[in-house]
Image (tube, rainbow, N blue to C red):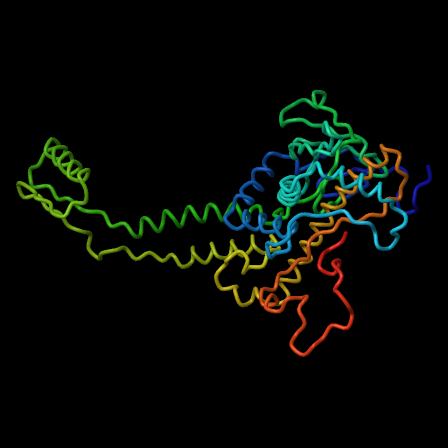
Length: 392
């Protein structure tokens, strides 16, 4: 075998799965299969996707990836490629559309959610009784890929739970396996919250801390003074009488016996500085929101409404949605191409997947795209439908 000049023939390639780096070294250090397959990382990312910011941001991205942003269009469609419309027959396009009809909107939504939340989505795509494609989503963290030592091509896929012996893993047929991958950098992808997984955990802990601090700062206990010489029996009797009164409802008046007293601590409500803790919570929220790529104003984060309406956040989110659609479309095309080749259709299959046109600027909605301004007449004819949708 001939080696490139920059690779010494004695160096053995070692893949660090999950980080995607291909390194060459002489020692036989054994690396873990993939850090992103670990339950610890999965638990941290679960905290991020269950976060009050991370969870809604994922749902918003899934909704925008499959819709127009206005709520009037939702889903996707297969169309013939405009560049070479003659290379795909009507029968082929009809067959492809029928194959994809086995997917539901919920399937698309769950696929997008998984590869954004976990970095990967694996599905065993089979044909149902009506010969339509049907995706069976597999547990993301249980799927293990193995690649060729030199070219990096996936040669084997297995499924196994943590703690299982590798020889007990279930083999997965690569011909029916489809892998949607976000930010792929070798075998696996990375979650959209990969960089803020620790911040999400701190956010949860900070929220618990501030709840405890707020409760302790706001609650002022009553001080019950027992008369001189009162013994433990007197104290227990007093507690029973007081608790019985509380069960009946709010206590407006308390009648005490034998010199007992009731008062509040001096100084009234305790003054405890919570501003620093609140600022930490706000900063954690912003970090998670930035990682989600969703504009702040869509997440309802205070102080970012005016800035969020600027053009830059909307454009960045539009790019993120377009990239998300592209990842979804690539996996769907893989399913459709396999389906067509199994029915003796010959590639290339020149078709496109069309998504609804994405509208993000609410101020733009005042003027409808198909409506001419007063005194202006459209001389180009009827607007094309493809100008109002995204084709991949």
